[in-house]
Image 1 (tube, helix red, strand yellow):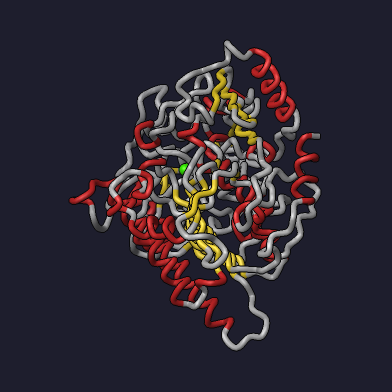
Image 2 (cartoon, rainbow, N blue to C red):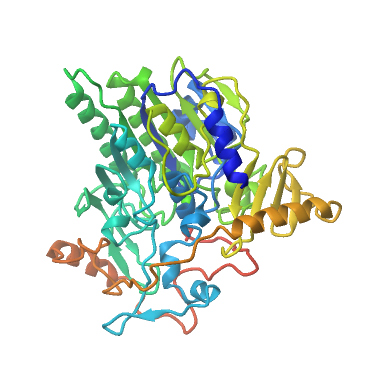
Length: 512
Ligand SMILES: [Ca+2]
């Protein structure tokens, strides 16, 4: 009921002058960077000069929220729906981990070959993604980088979800140099995961640089194919860097000066500079909306200061991230917008800019923000559902100035650092918010598709079709790395973290 009312409000909002103006949209997403690790937010400004420049040339949204980890944020961006509605609060790899399955009353299954394997999970192909909305509205749609919304079934891969061009990896992360990644669960060895247009490709180089090069090429090629055309086809370019998510292996430059993490960040900044440069050099500067955001907070609390918490928590440090937007003449340089926004809002906002249709069967949580970002309107969003029951994390909801995280209550406006739990003093508000988030929990759909199993249990390469008739070079590459991996694990230990206990997880290592 409440969401229905919100949808009506959003439909009735005053049109902004940019509605239907069909700009190119370049959406750049970083991975696992902490709030204060960007130069414009506190860290050494020399580390992120290009990202700082975006901040200077555009608007910073300082009340912008995502979900607490990679997959739910990406699914929410793609579908315009809170992660729980697509079960994306559970990552695909979680369905191969006994400790996670136990929380759903399930056990690890075996495939027909008798191998313990993963149940297949990803964003349902019947979701209408933002790429599909923009493609239907006449955009050319492209993704370069990390997907993490299903790595096996063709219908759950980017080109089954509205992208006309694809480059990068499907899984939770990538070794930036050898393009392999630990399958994570339940098999413990690496899988090859680097593709163009959903065919495996071998390309030497550092993943951050390669993702940037692909985006630059897409932008340049788009310009060439558009020249001389009467009707301009706009471009939607989704660039999802793995940086600076672990594993941080060899980094081609800056390591001696800055150490691995910040060398990776500086490489990410180089990449952002190249992509924005390609937009400008192609003559697209004035009709392109460039967005830079981050998918969730950093792994350690000090990275997210002044906010509390880390990735995989629903404290501000986990879910409040920087978001910059540049569109010359349409957005005031160096401005700040404090309207509350959620990553799902891009769905409605992009559709409105594109003159696309928001009609669909499934309930949208996103709200059109064009009049907030490009006009003077105040954000009508006063609520964000981060988590409901049935997640591995505690239910969490922001409503107005307040946020309920499990049983804790904070006034985010007065206490953005969430230092003072005020639940005991506000039992009525706690009861109201608990009831509200429980109501949303009842909207979680049944979990389906769990009879689909990954077979073989340990593929050579991600993508069910790509794993048929695997070329020898992939097998050679993968075997070479598997030979260097540990062959045994102590009983009861796993190469991946255990499921959170009591809704909490402590993050270490490569960010899994
Ligand atoms: Ca992430």
